[in-house]
Every structure is written in structure tokens, then in C-alpha cells.
Image (cartoon, rainbow, N blue to C red; front, top):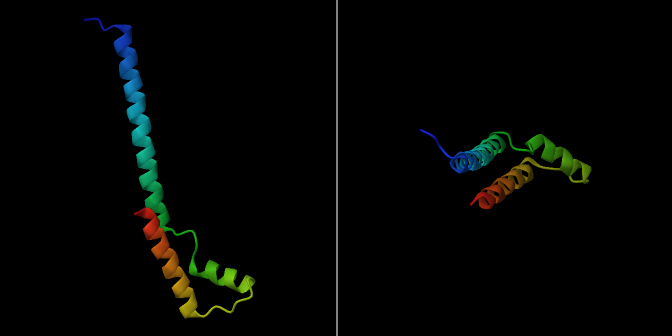
Length: 78
């Protein structure tokens, strides 16, 4: 049973394409879950940013900003 060189090349190319596609979507899914569990901006970071801008952040204002950022990120994912 002999398989021609052209078929081997085709099998290798298909395997590489499937691997790259699977790797891309796997990494994308992993990063989305990671960022969802570990958001890049925490409440403490937001508080310090507001204080650096000269604002005195209240708890209500902080929660409003965090909720609006979460809502914006949900809309981006849709």
C-alpha cells in the first residue's frame, strides 16, 4: 500500500490548518474566560484613578462606573 507524495502533503497541510484553527479558538476562549474572572480594572484601581484626576469618589459613583464598564464589555462581546 503506497500513498503518493501529493496525498501526504495534502494531509499535512490539512492537519496544520486544523491545528492552527483549533489553537486560535481555544486560546481565544481561554482568554475571554480569564478576563471575565480577572477583570483588568478593580474597584481600588478605579478609586485611585479618580483621586489622581482630582475627584473625590463616592461608593455610589464607583459602583456606577464599574457597572457601566461591565455593561459596555458585555455589549462588546455580543
